[in-house]
Image (cartoon, rainbow, N blue to C red; front, side):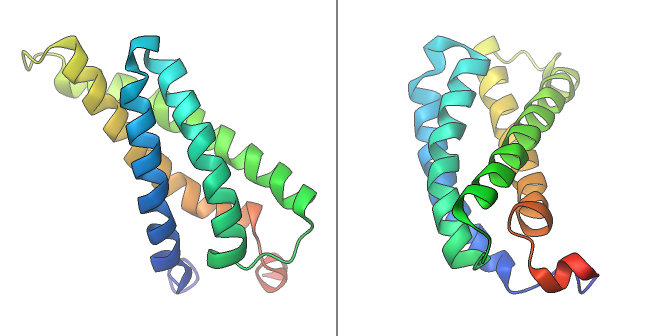
Length: 138
């Protein structure tokens, strides 16, 4: 358990607050484009910001910019697809008979997708995208 919890979590969460605010504002401003386009555009913008902040501030990556960027992009893409693909059926099951409008069901689905994405993304960045040399050997 100690290997999963370390001092990078508060830094990651701080960067994540900024990323989440940026992504949420964009996602809801662009909701007229539909579920997938609005979330995709928002996450690309947030991902660019997060890449630079997490690479330098949170995980202090020593990998080349290109290598860490490719690994980061793979991680973000996988986390995005998994989180939002799972959020839709889960939210449909949970919210389906609540009487909420479709717009509010979609908004709550997006919030659930954001939460799942955050958890998956932390572990993906820490153990894959910005993996430290000593952790790689473990």
